[in-house]
Image 1 (cartoon, rainbow, N blue to C red):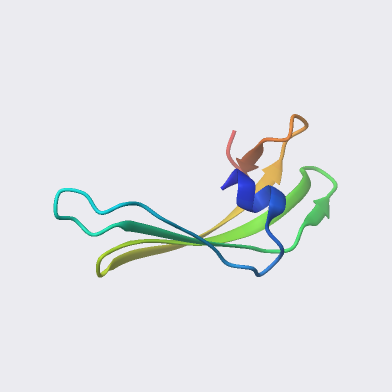
Image 2 (image 1 turned 120 degrees about the vertical axis):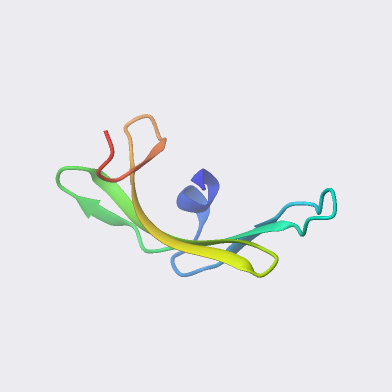
Length: 79
């Protein structure tokens, strides 16, 4: 996630897949970062859309991440 937030161009898909194990299909992760937005209170933030799937099961999500002073990213609104 950090690499996609740091290096990913807005609206460009990044994909990752695990290896299949013990007869289970691989886990696939698709991440799509939004544009960088500068905020007054939280600094630089990005919306990140994701989908995690395994076989026919999938979960979609959208989260806002803001970059901390040390370069790490934190989900917006969490303490």
